[in-house]
Structure formats: C-alpha cells, structure tokens
Amino acid sequence: LRALDREKRAAFYQHHLQSEQQVLVERQGSSGMLKGFSENYIPVHFSGPAELVGTVIPVTLTEINGDKVCGIRGEKNRD
Image 1 (cartoon, rainbow, N blue to C red):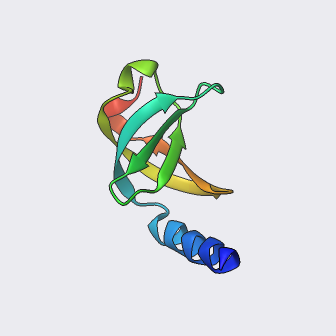
Image 2: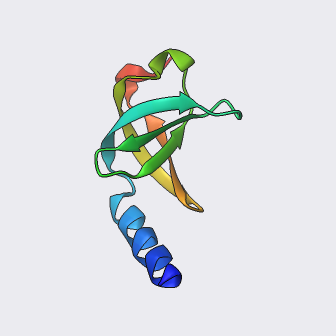
C-alpha cells in the first residue's frame, strides 16, 4: 500500500507541475526556505522573506524533490 501511495502521490504532483497554485505559507524552515501547502494540500517549498508566513500567495510549481514540490513565487510577490 505504501508503494501505491508513493506512486499516486507522484502522479498527482506531476499533474500539477508548471501550474500556479495559491499557497498558504506556514513557516520558514531551518534551510531558510518557506514551506506551505497549496489549496489541494501539495507541500510546497520556495524561497522568500519570512514576512510572507501566514499569507496566501501564488506559487508556480517547478519540480518534484522527493515527497515535496519546489516552486517559485508569482511576480507580484518577489523581492
């Protein structure tokens, strides 16, 4: 069942690559990357200032890295 879960999760993440998602920024990790979840619960990691924690911002999903998805912030929300 775990293998099936990984397979289905990877397919779901792959389906959403290159799309812009609304992400609730939950925290800044020890690596300095922001972490949050999209509206459909995809865990997303991306760079940005800590001031974005607690906000919802557009993030374009760019790559799958293990069990998380990496992205870049929308143009309006860049430094």
